[in-house]
Each structure stands twice: as structure tokens, then as C-alpha cells.
Image 1 (cartoon, rainbow, N blue to C red):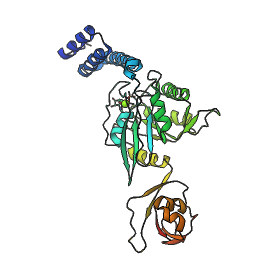
Image 2 (tube, rainbow, N blue to C red; image 1 turned 30 degrees about the vertical axis):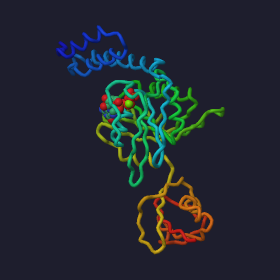
Image 3 (spheres, helix red, strand yellow; image 1 turned 180 degrees about the vertical axis):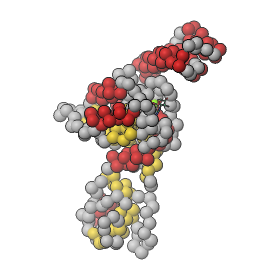
Image 4 (cartoon, helix red, strand yellow; image 1 turned 90 degrees about the horizontal axis):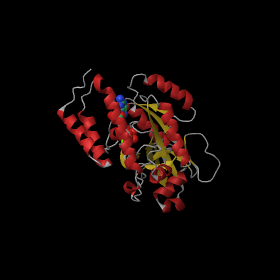
Length: 326
Ligand SMILES: Nc1nc2c(ncn2[C@@H]2O[C@H](COP(=O)(O)OP(=O)(O)OP(=O)(O)O)[C@@H](O)[C@H]2O)c(=O)[nH]1
Ligand SMILES: [Mg+2]
């Protein structure tokens, strides 16, 4: 089948052949990829362009000049910080685009994301911070990437159900993390200094792709005991509501609302506490004064009498409303 290449493509190709620096080559390749006609006859060429592009981008990432000692950090905000980790091209950036107001670059080739980009994900009445990251891959060896992952409250492990090398790529990601002494999921990390375990939700992305359902089943069989999983499509939006809910649950926090005696019962801005918190923990959050002088409280909530009187050791639950008395 003839490729029917456009003049723009041929011009970009001419440029690609004449330029010297990696930056210029990347730029010309991107242009070629953007202008190549998309049909069966150019599929091989497209794949080849992508391969060359990701190789050059990885080269850029490895070069000391591009690091220049820059250490990226992401200040925590909101109910919890959740880092997106995974192989190149799995859809991390598109997920962050869909779930937050942030607008990271999304592209059809690996190593698109080069720096962290946080965005706030609304869930009911709280906001969870998601952090889009470069891929976890041997070709992106920046130490700050692993520091951000280590520092996050939890991670989303994003994999690509349309990837023929899905299992291999997932193992590469987990292996890279192991080099940085990070263990994702339920399994205990090695009992050695420096290791830590991160709560992780496995996000099986691109469920819209053909054959994705069968791949998801294989994935569940192999990794289901280690990770809770959700299947989504960042492209079509399928499963994203369940994902928001699952992210909130993974953070293991509860929302508690306070009301003043005699005031109306309403659930406005919540206090966010760790799951397992007691009345006294809430009191300490609200005011030092309550910590010392708290006598009792009334609680409205799930499975309680309305306005039930409780003492300092009462275990709080998500969405409880509490009236503190001193
Ligand atoms: N069909 C389909 N394509 C998707 C989906 N999610 C992402 N993509 C596409 O996959 C490609 C990669 O998406 P990105 O969000 O840039 O992937 P990434 O994981 O951020 O990639 P890196 O930054 O290189 O690590 C883009 O062409 C997306 O449009 C999905 O659910 N379904
Ligand atoms: Mg990205």
C-alpha cells in the first residue's frame, strides 16, 4: 500500500536528517509523527517513529545536563497525596487530566512526562492530591522520582491493558521500585534497612482496547492478592467514578463534621482524621481547650441513636457529626 506522505511530513523528515542535537531530532520526529497519514500502509512507519522518539527522549532524560542537579519536590495538599506510577505510555497523564483540573501533556509515545505535576481530585466534599510522574523505567533513573514516590501517602500503579508486554512492563516497574527499596501493595518488604511499603491501588487502564477484558482477568489472577484493582478507561471515562471512591478509601481516613450546641445539623467542611480515630483525637484537632476540658459529646451518624452521648474514647466513623461539650 502506498504511504501517500504529505509535503509537511517530507519536510520534517528532511529536517530530521539534517539536524544534529537530540532536542532538534526529537522536535523533528514529533512533527513527523504528527503529520504522517494514519492508515494501514503507514502502521510500521508509525511504530518505527515512536520507537526512535522514545529512544531519543530516554537519552535526553539520561543526560547529566538535563538533570543539572534539579530536585523536584511536591508539597502535600488536601486529604492525601497519591503518586501515579507505572510503565511508560500507560495513561498516567490522561488519568490526571480526567480526574483533576491539571493539564499534563498526553501523547502517543513513551517518556512524555518529564517532571512531576500535581492536581487536586475532588471526591464528594474533599480533595485528594494526585501527582502525575514520569514513567518508572530503567531509562528514567532520576533519584527525585523515587523520593516523591517514597514520600507519597499512597500510589496508583497504572498499567496498560492494550500493551502486549503488559506483564513484563509491570515487572520492570516493580523491579525499578525494588531498586529504590520501595515495595508496592500488600506484600511485606524485605526485612532490611531503608525498605518501605506503599499502599497501592492497581489501575488497569485502557479497558476500551480490544482483548483488554481477558488481560484484566489474567492480571487479577496473578496480582489480585497483592493489589486491590480497578479497571478504567481514561479515554472513555469508564470506571473513573469507582476509581475516585477507591482512591479515597485507600487513604484510610474519615470525615467528621462538628456542630455547635443548639445549632442546626449540617455537614459542611469536614475534619479529616485517620481511620480508627477517637473522640479525643477530634477534640485535639478542633482546639487545645477541648483536649483538656472535654466532658462528653453528642454524635449523629451511621448506626447510632441520633444525638447519642459518647465519651472520650468513642470510635468515630466517616460522616459522623459531633457536638463537643466542655
Ligand atoms: N484507548 C485508550 N488510550 C488511552 C487511554 N488512556 C490513555 N490512552 C492513550 O495512551 C497514550 C499515552 O497516554 P499518557 O497519558 O501520555 O501516558 P503516560 O503514562 O502519562 O506516559 P508517560 O508520560 O510517557 O509515562 C496517549 O495516546 C493516550 O491518549 C485509554 O483508557 N484508552
Ligand atoms: Mg505522562
